[in-house]
Image 1: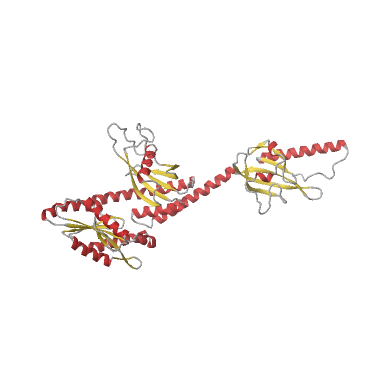
Image 2 (image 1 turned 60 degrees about the vertical axis):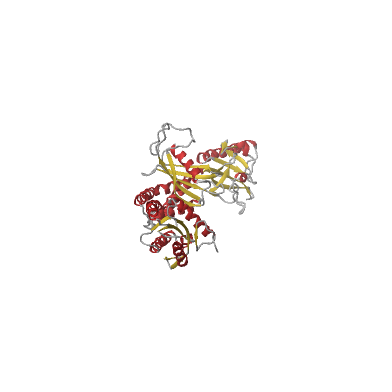
Length: 492
């Protein structure tokens, strides 16, 4: 039971007074011993809130000698200065009041304070007596539990939104966008580190996800890992893709998947998290933040959980890409892909040269196509690309070639067409645009870059694509909505 200050009926003659004083000291000692069993620190303060009694001799890094006479409230990290409440000098009993106590090294510990006021004979507040329990570990356990629940909910919500999409590309794009929002990341890359045979004299490549038995010194380039960027989201990479992928694959070559780490690279704090898949080992997710902001372990756990849930989609994506490469078809539109287009054009060039015929390459870009994704969403954007592919296919002869080069850029190859015939066709395209139906009917403006290959000029399709792309870039820079031949001035 707490004592309530000086005793008004303290005997005045020596023997009785001494006995009572001894009993009082013994009572306070017993109280302190009992309190110490149930707490980490017992205390008593005076009317000014300063410590006058403490036990044990050392607690929370402080010693009794250091704290005696110190205002107890100054040890609190955040005193309740607004309400004026001081748990070390309460007016009414306080039980398990939560607060943060400052240690001598500046660190803070979570505590629970229980205290009762002490009163003088006249009823005024003369101090307080109480105990303190260290609650730091309990707080950490609660934080870990809450963080785990939040991580589970975050990954589950990202997965739920990803399931709305059908195509792997779109699933991954939605997932990465959601991950950036959930973690506050500025940007992300998904990098594959494919195994490749080492050159003669080099170390043997490691097994999937394993460490090499021997190899170059730490940090050196590892020639048996061929990095490539599979997907990207958010802000542009802080440095070149080459620098990022080189660092990622150096790290991956000496670590066993799955692994996750937070480190400083490229003048930023980054999260790297990796998993193994059947088609590339490993796949690494790179997240970065601007402004030097740090990452929490919870951010890293969410990133790792996201990548693990993405493994099946990544493998499906790899299968589709390989099938498309082998079949020569673009998976979204059904047109030729870039590689198949180049192969077919090169096959036709010998015949055109033998017959003395020219040909024209048209590279068509949909102006401000990004606004469709921003306004209607990426799935509607895909619908627009599919509809645009049908319009372009109908705009040329059945013997001509139409391909999707990537994004919103298409290629049309017109056998036997000279500059005049190609210019007429490009003018019609620019005048009409491309009609697509999303929520409403929309007329997409197009820009066209052209280059003509005269008979026996010996120009390859790669050169022609570079020329047509340069022409397209020039007309886009001038405002778009028109056509332009390579090596001709852009008119008004």
